[in-house]
Image 1: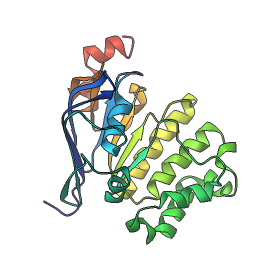
Image 2 (image 1 turned 135 degrees about the vertical axis):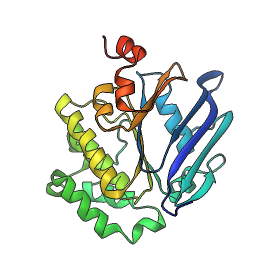
Image 3 (image 1 turned 45 degrees about the horizontal axis):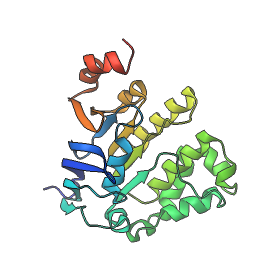
Length: 246
């Protein structure tokens, strides 16, 4: 395998909370350098799958394997810290910033893994370049910023980890339409600049498909459709009927 191969393979995963099963035999793959959209409305299991990848929730069945720089890692049994140290970063739903810390302090806290520390200055400079508002407000408390600014900060903080694989959970939640568009554009820009592999869980189909190479539709915890291109997803009857109102 090439040394720069970074991918995720999810095979037959079941997961839930207590007696409630949320994910049912979920399988998907994100190949190296791809942006893959996991599409579905609220409550269908998108965030639970992200939590399983990051070690916040444990599958009751199945495998999650990440390939980082050409080396395969079975994520089952690894702690979240170990998964982050591999180079997998999550931008969580709701952003989960440190509200009483400044913008700059939040960014520096993002550079937690050892391999990121050598790149702090370069990555910080790039974050301020791509998000000039963050540079203007680097001394401002994160909790006092607008929703759009906080989403910028959450994306930038994930990039400070110097990741190989970026997971983005519901980036459009709580944002005005114009800010949603800007946020999706920023994800593509960051992906291209850092040559990332991206899995994005999103309910805004139209925006997600602007940057996704392909995607999956999850309904009630099951993958109901796999589209091998944005066009294939756009033209799928399930999506047109239930999600695009067509």
